[in-house]
Length: 159
Image (tube, rainbow, N blue to C red; front, top):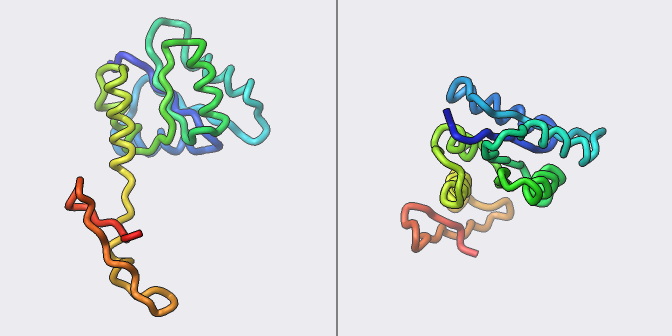
């Protein structure tokens, strides 16, 4: 069993949908909760739900939120300032969630950095190459892709 629990905290149906998608890929995931903020709920209501799901034991808690600066992230961060068991990471995506649930055996700074890197690496505009060779709506051609010096296998549109 993973030595920490995971809380997915976000707007609307997103936390439950992310969890359902992760379980579609990986099967049932233990010790994880999806907590949503809905339009009719207050930040205090969300804070109570997060605190309840975090539990009262001494186990660390990873809180994955959908949007930095959004109410779910702000509430989780405020709780984390009062409860050192909580570690918050914003910008959760499916790759980050799967890594947290299946690939981490501890919850420390190195593990959090790994989650952020996995989340970033999963973001990719696969249409860059196709868009760079197709004519634009005004008839002009798009700029040719530019190779990234740190990742020659990745192309970027010239700025």
